[in-house]
Image 1: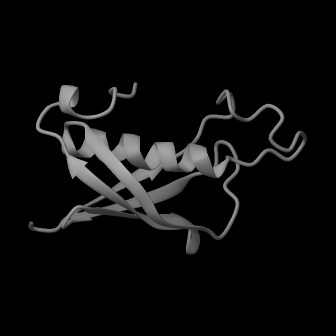
Image 2 (image 1 turned 60 degrees about the vertical axis):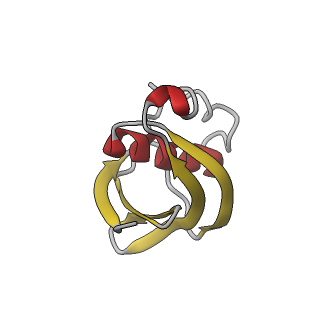
Length: 113
């Protein structure tokens, strides 16, 4: 498979439903929300669904706050979706999903809004 790469801005809205109770007074975007954002961005980029087989690696190195601007870099090759989320020059999170690209959204997980 030929490697493909993509870069996109990432920002989690301060009214995201996962934020209440996640450190009241000093909210932090949960890691699971960042992972969901990675998969959603990948599906938008590819234009179709992904089947996720495993999260092979993930490291959360720094906190991302609601409404804080970040960059998401994606690379897809050989059934691996690699991601890196950065804020300015600091790595927030990086990792690797084992994936299968679907020919159509109906072949993959339920499309995300």
